[in-house]
Amino acid sequence: MKIAVCIKQVPTREWQPRLNDDKTWVRDQDVSYEMNEPDAYALEEALRLREKHGGEVVVCSAGPARVQQVIREALARGADRALHVEDDSLAAADAFTAATALTAAMAEQKFDLILTGLQSDDQGHAQFGPVLAEKLSIPHSTIIMEVNVDGQSLKVKRELEGGWFQYVTMPLPALLTIQSGINQLRYATLKGIMAAKKKEIAKVAAPGGLAARQKIVSLYAPQKAKQTVMITGSAADAARELVKRLREEARVL
Figure: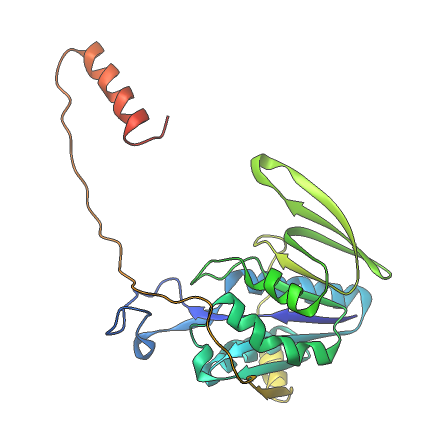
């Protein structure tokens, strides 16, 4: 199988965000980056499918030169080669723009299966995978918890709400968005890190005419605040008032 895994470089979760001067994104100079966690699970699932069915795993990413940090990490974990659509304008691209940037380069590769993380840790739109699938004119399924390949078809397990699951059979080629926790992640070994230095990273120029479909007008850090409310009266009256506030104000009942 020829499997593609789309990965994204995102700010580390432990990092305290600092906004840029116009309050539209984070200050790039102060950011520490890592691989998007849902994408790491997609990569692991691809590696397991390769071990079971043979073939190769190709990592695909779009963004500025710094994205090679997570590309090298993916190669060290076991991916065979990488495809990087390099352009500084894609640093904070929306899902539609990022998918458009990768479409032409990925279409030429004719992948049997494309895996992405369910969503990104920074923007969290969960739109990239479905948009990419539509642009490539291939079927897709989301929130995947199990993948089984049988010849030229897939049987996947989707996570639904309320503890329910759905089983879907679909043809190849296809795109799946992988839910975190589908597997146990592996980490790069010293041997893998050394081998990654010799693996190919094919750089591809971004297509012309890229135009963002989404504009971030303003960002702000959430303000932490707490307020103590004293409820007076008898125990019975206080209990009734507490239940009322929990139901109507806190909305936890």
